[in-house]
Length: 109
Length: 115
Image (cartoon, rainbow over all chains, first blue to last red; front, side, top):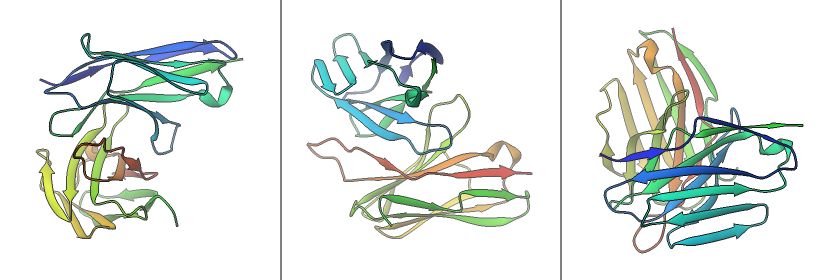
């Protein structure tokens, strides 16, 4: 079957760095997405990786290893507004998104 | 209006009621989606419409009935729901895939409570 695993909850300190891991098993693979979802709001797109390596976008970076079925989202210089759920989703061979349950990130001052 | 809008934002209904959720996208996309989001569970894809035709129906109970009258509008008609149907219902839209990734844009969701 198809499956996405990511930690349920993580806690980090304002100004620090946090890495949220995601492993996936899908029928075919056409890329890996990360979305951010604040409580009570819509998920918003953060990043997309389809080739191995690190993609950097300001304070956020996303990494992909296709051979390991593994990705991570790296958040630097954490701010209180980064408190949110982070959703990992893999695009399968039918271009359908397979979603993880999300990682709730709590930022403490 | 920009992006993806959903109405109502909150809905409380009894098990015998009939109600409809509405979604509208202003992005010129040609695919639309209904998702169910329950606490601590992955997003559950319910229905996919591509070029106004339903292409995906993931074993959703018949008490949920989608309608896509055109590429900008999507409805979810609800009747005789159960308390376990209480959840956040998200609408999303995207461009059809085919050599390019289909980033999905989400609406703010309808928080549904079934009493």
